[in-house]
Amino acid sequence: MPTPPIEVSRSAPLRDQVYAAIESMIVNHILAPGERLVEADLATRLNVSRNPVREALTGLSRAGWVIFVPYAGAFVAEQTLEDAEECFLTRRVLESEAAREAAVKVAAGDPEALRASHALSAVMRSASPASEPSDGLTLIQANACFHAELASICGNRLLVDFCRTLEKRLTWFYGAVGFDRTSKSWQEHTALLDAVVAGDPEGAAGLMARHIEKTSVAFRERWSSTEAESAADL
Amino acid sequence: MSDDSTVVRAAPLRDQVYSALETLIVRGDLQPGERLVEAEVAARLGVSRNPVREAMTALARSGWIEMRPRSGAFVREQSSTDGADCFQIRCVLEAEASRQLAQLVADDPDAMRPGLERLGRLIAAVRPQIDHAEQSWLVEANAQFHRLLVELTNSGILIDFLAQLDKRVRWHFGAVAVARAHDSWREHALLLKTIERGDQAGAHDRMAQHIRNTAQAFEARCTPSKVVTAHS
Image (cartoon, rainbow over all chains, first blue to last red):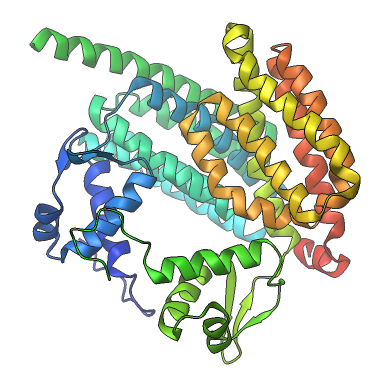
């Protein structure tokens, strides 16, 4: 593990750290969808007092990760196919726009966009799906990482934040069904990054839209087969 | 502070101060570039300086306030880049919302009729008022139209993302609300007609054009020097 960078500024408030910790446990299925969340247990687990846990849970419910059920308490949200599809639809339009804007910036010679797109190209060339560890979660994270890096080239911070929120949500959905498009996804990623580096806005946007469409079709198939399997187990 | 047995807990003071300051900024009561002095804000809101300091740190994190070393805290200046970033996302998300709404209408016109009628009533109520309406009223009416339209899609993510942008939109839209009012509501009416026909591509494009028009009006309002800086 690399050492974390030394924090120069004041560290984030405790409630924000607790929020991030619980969010990450949910995204990575350490806390399962539908699992009951007990304030005191979480406080013990994270070694903090109950106050920041309570504040974090309120914030997480606003963001849709946690559901408060009257007289029953707090629960991790359940996953539904409808929610996942909504995610894919929104992600398609937002990330296509981010890819288009990234290519526009590259074509205009924006130094930051040029640097970031070439850096990402170099990372893509030095790694390949074969050299990646085949751990399911790592692949899901590598995929999310590519999308986040690509989106960040566009320079619109709000857009990048929204893309990141959706990536987290999709990482959560993929945690339930696994990820099986590695080599196809890799080729599509490479092609659309090439379009960004070439400064081709319509090409980049079109490739991103098609890539996400294909991903969502594959996701739907895995979701149905996972549902069929769990039905067979009962 | 409240104890565990209280059922309804009041929001912590720093959150209340945060909301109060945010509202003052969004409405333009605190002007872009205005200096914020902790003690004065505390006196104005009738609270101590601690929650003001915490709220100001949080406002700086969310971009409403700019902390300048050795000179203090200032309300963020409106820049054409900020506005353009915000309008770019709205354009994408709201065009998608309009498309989805037109699709819902095409799939089941009867189910969608009450919602579309609400949009129609809002347009009919607002248009005759435009000439003698104040800026804040126009900003509110515009926010209502766009929120209602997005809510009719029933897409949790679109609703949530656009709600997160709502304050920024109001802040930026305030600058052009009066100048754009007649054109803007004519565009709303045309958009609604397109949605009523269930025309997905048309609804998408009309909304995109509507937001691009506002974005252009906003950009023209930003001082020329700022526009030059943003492009240099």
